[in-house]
Amino acid sequence: MSMEVREEIAVCGGKLLNLSHYASVVNCNMNVNVYLPQQYYTGSDGPIPVIYFLSGLTCSPHNASEKAFWQIQADKYGFSVVYPDTSPRGENVPDDSAYDFGVAAGFYLNATEEPYKKYYQMYDYVHRDLPAQLMDYFNNLKGTKVDFMVNISITGHSMGGFGALSGYLQNYGTKKYKACSAFAPIVNPTNVPWGQKAFGNYLGNDKSKWQLYDPCDLIKRVRNDGDDIILIHQGTNDTFLKENLKSQLLLEASKGTSWENKIDLRLVNGFDHSYYFVSSFVPEHAKFHAKHLGLI
Amino acid sequence: MSMEVREEIAVCGGKLLNLSHYASVVNCNMNVNVYLPQQYYTGSDGPIPVIYFLSGLTCSPHNASEKAFWQIQADKYGFSVVYPDTSPRGENVPDDSAYDFGVAAGFYLNATEEPYKKYYQMYDYVHRDLPAQLMDYFNNLKGTKVDFMVNISITGHSMGGFGALSGYLQNYGTKKYKACSAFAPIVNPTNVPWGQKAFGNYLGNDKSKWQLYDPCDLIKRVRNDGDDIILIHQGTNDTFLKENLKSQLLLEASKGTSWENKIDLRLVNGFDHSYYFVSSFVPEHAKFHAKHLGLI
Image 1 (cartoon, rainbow over the protein chains, first blue to last red):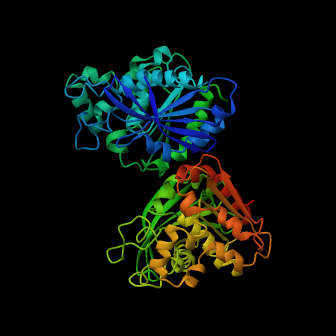
Image 2: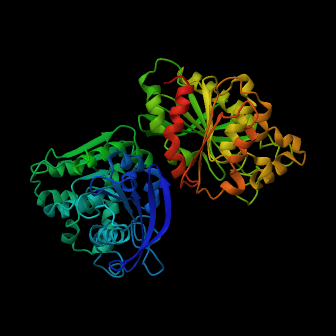
Image 3: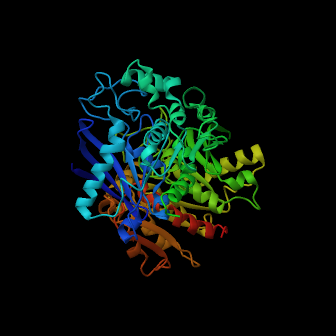
């Protein structure tokens, strides 16, 4: 339960910590980046809330740290940002030569199949183990006021957008996350090539296990008991939209459910799948989350 | 005199164009990125001014486009940003295995030595040929209102910070650039390893030729005839500060000259040499340039 600070980088008014820690749930060392906003250093009135940003295929924690530009928003509103890695890594971790499966493609689920299940427990890592370890480390070290476990929300890009939607909905009953948003998410993994490949290998052939993670299935089973809105941006020039992302399917699945008209899907003209797209809409997502985290 | 649009990417309220064009002055095809702000598309009152951002060692036009986050500032104030490449490239271009010389290390000067002089004419490319080609292309194509040649200013990072200072001062007499700023620039290349290696190879052993490009020498010969200020940010944790950047030397050189107290050098505590540093201070530089370009 200890963190190694590999780098502490001044960014905007705060610091980005590049951390490494052993996570027994995934049986390996994990990298994670944490941005502590200026309010952490100047003293804040209360505990600083946290946004978890889940990244997409091929990413490490650095891609979004460098290119999504959450930091200036974090300073503006006073939240911390956690950038988890996208899979377990290391010599022993079973991998695949494809970019869409194995290392950097953990799909934020708990694998049940050999040889993956020993390491690919990314659901438990992101939603349980990592927050607890961050809480433990920062509390012990500095008596900090960052709240990594209670006043938190979640977002992500592409595979990470799927991870955010899936984790938010699976934990909706306990109100674990105050809000959820996504950038170009995979919304219906059980019906698209990226998801079918990953789910088949990680979860096996029993598709009832797949549905536990599928946002299009979850919104039918998880009751929206308030006015909770999910904010999603999707670029119309995204080359993955038609085959793998299919954001429209989430809107269709919501019809007749408690989530009807609660999915705020914004198709944005001309935007692609890159971090140029993500960074362009981070200000809107930051405002959305800041509101739900009680910052505005 | 034609431009190939390799990609047109929606970013913030405008578009980033990844362009390629043949530049006879450097005898090869050059890549350049141009951000056209939302004002270009929504219609602006007058010609849109331009900031040239010169990148550092190892960079292509993409590094700063992706990580410096000028785009949101460009939309805010209404300027275009041009990201030139850092050297000629291609099979025929003489290169070196080191990161600090040859391809991606053109040092924004006109080489006089073999085998470099045929290609490494980056001074003429950046300050003369590129602006003319951009003006020609955009005027012919769209009757645009972007002013790539008159209401312009210049900035850059590291080697590009040197390029900005050097180009600004060499052209100060004609007021070619309305303002100049720099992020962690090499200020005294003739006295540091990076500069000595590059200048020796590109310019030969006659050090009188080196001085034509050296900001610490230029400020003694170029008279500041108004209230022109050069804005520089430099991180105190920059690993290149002590040996290669040495920003303090520019302040020292300015003493007793017309530039004394006109170099606004801001040492910023804890910042490193990365784009995390650059992006953190781009908002201040954007405001500085916007003011000198008549936008605020």
